[in-house]
Image (cartoon, rainbow, N blue to C red):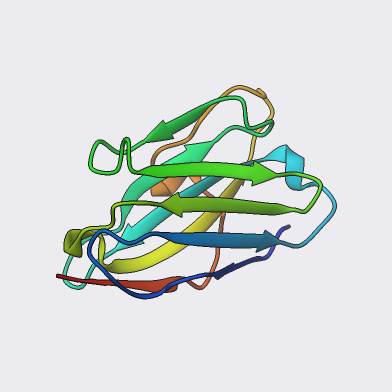
Length: 127
């Protein structure tokens, strides 16, 4: 089992950058695919980005492609989401998620595929 704690959210102006962090407990962080999702008020939770266990493959939602970058540091048990050129429509609660992966090269993009979730961190982007 793994516990996830997000940090790094806040209030920024459009065009600014933020870096979210997701700290994971446990000794098997490198066994988990990591993902970021977000949920805006009145909307369903949506996929943002995901990264393989080794960090050698990533996947992004079209809405963030070219602006957001997911990464991980297995030595620090931490995943990151670098968000650049933020837009007001990026405003949401951002959740970190993890799921055990035995293939080594798969990237999961749906919420149902993830077993563990953090509590979320709020990101507000003003125009």
